[in-house]
Length: 328
Image (cartoon, rainbow, N blue to C red):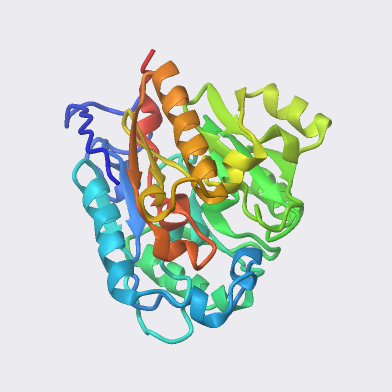
């Protein structure tokens, strides 16, 4: 189901944190939202590399490629209607089963002057290690400065921008805290570190979603009190439940004044536990959206659930222009 909401921002309106030249030379410098997606030509679930996939046998987790493409195009069409969407080329079909999940490819450090700095991933997940070279070639071809840390790091899905040079980073399962220490030294930034321990919530985007530059959705039950106290110094925490997080409430993307989230509600049977959990998650999102003056759009990405992923996994921010204005 997709709730088609068409928010708008005047084309000439500038981001209040714009540091690049007046004429943009790459998507990060653009005064409109820009994202990186990958058409799922190489998408497969041959290697079970997360807890969700391990629960399914090979037949159960094998995606319907036609349906997966249709669902991808729905996401692409929705985002591209009001933003710039780049498509990451797929250089080969074999050995890149997760390339479609571009949020793990790296992170654009928007606070760095010039809007041309990307930190690529050093993957823990073995089937994904070939993606780093693809990301390097792609971003270097567009004139970005590229960096690959020596320690483990799995991209934007693990590192969320709050405001200015302040970020929140997840570690413990796929990324290492030493990566954030290096980033702080190298790029003059502050990273609030949160330790991940639940194998089903294995990236930070499963439990943390910056709603605005002032408020952040957080599954507080997943973190230690001292970590949360440090995070609360930098953002107002909006608590969400573990059930809602498992259902993907934090795996959202903001596009202007719309929260975009994945929901397969119409594929589920009413009265089942999965249905009830999905309804509860969607209603919680509706309440949050109403309170903070957002609209809500839901897109069915069920074929990507078979790869243990949700909407935010498929979207890498090339800038965060949507966060440049306040709604209330």
